[in-house]
Image (cartoon, rainbow, N blue to C red; front, side):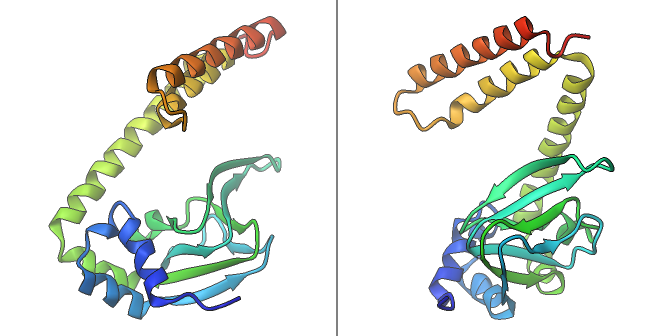
Length: 200
């Protein structure tokens, strides 16, 4: 596996919603601090509850972000591919990792230590304001999810999730896409209702 070029590393930061707002000099400074780590498929990258001392970007491969219950049931939060960044939460607040990260395929990651990242963010008030907005949005979504689990039946939650996915569809016609997703949501609701799933 060939080592990633400086330009490949730079493009990952430039495409990121937050780090893309840094100047070229600031991005180059971060890249100079970063190191490359490689993981075989199936290997743990970090575990939930471990210290969050670094932010990671996927250069090659795919990474699964998940969590296990005490009974061994797994919930997968995200699948990350080349060009995506993860590990921001623990790096920013200095707390523990909020989920497990596992290499789904052979992976090559760009790793940036918290001690090298924070000085850059501390000098950019505009980036901190973006982070505050993101954290507020996450809190609102978490509250909404707790309400859905508490008050909604399963079929209602499935229908709502499908409708929310409609704007992300890759269809070329937005109105047609929305109609398709809403129809699917209706079918999901009818199907789960007939089977009796989710009834209180």
